[in-house]
Image (cartoon, rainbow, N blue to C red; front, side):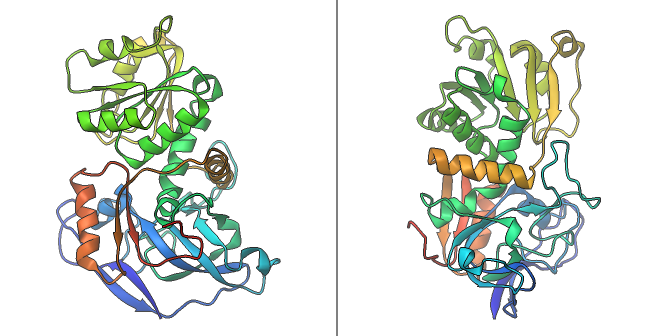
Length: 365
């Protein structure tokens, strides 16, 4: 049997309800075709998991295990796997979605991009002890990462990689570039910080929490400001190196007045890459931004090709995802899991929240 964590249906309106977690016993799956059987050892939370519990995420179902991020060990292969010895016993991380191979524009599949965990759009979830998945949808986990770190990488790593490397382009993100990351503390912003520092960019951050700014500096940021302070934009520009008057790129997950701020601090032709809108689902585009030739680019998740590129970069530069807290337990510990969810609901985390429910052979902890 294989335990899995599911949502339990109760009455309540979207945004007001908070579906309880429950554990169900499932038959251990058998790999078919070119599938791998993976014994999962850790999974990480994302904001979408909280939104699912609040019925604020599309495609919600009560029949698919939760979780889009995870790591595990291959313990079986289907008859269509051409080189079973390549995978048997290997520690792997799972591509968090499907339907997007390599197009720069977006998912090729007519059904769109489908993310793992808790929806009827994709019948896989990482919060279960065993799952099957196509061999084309996994990458060998970077050897320098612990199970918790490997579990924390996929979704935020892929989102940050596309928003920063793909959308903001090399000319705005490479050595000596000035890059602003808004809302430091979340998983995507922190992974983007890791990528930007590894590329040699001068990274600055915003937050309403001074402690988070200081932690970001310890991770390689050059400085940061409290965005609730009056005139923070001018203060931020004053931190730039001598001769540098504007930022090359802004990687933003807030939305709201991002274009207005970008028009003040971005160079002419600079890029505002937006991967989320936590402040507001609408973002006015101002004439100021038009006159400065500023480009606003939406970015969400990424392709299978970009996932591989991101994992390879992490391996090459020995990058470690930032972990806020690891819960070491089994999947039956609903109270413990609820505690992790509560941390995310209240925005307490600096980095990823991970549940580790098994040890893989390649675990570093």
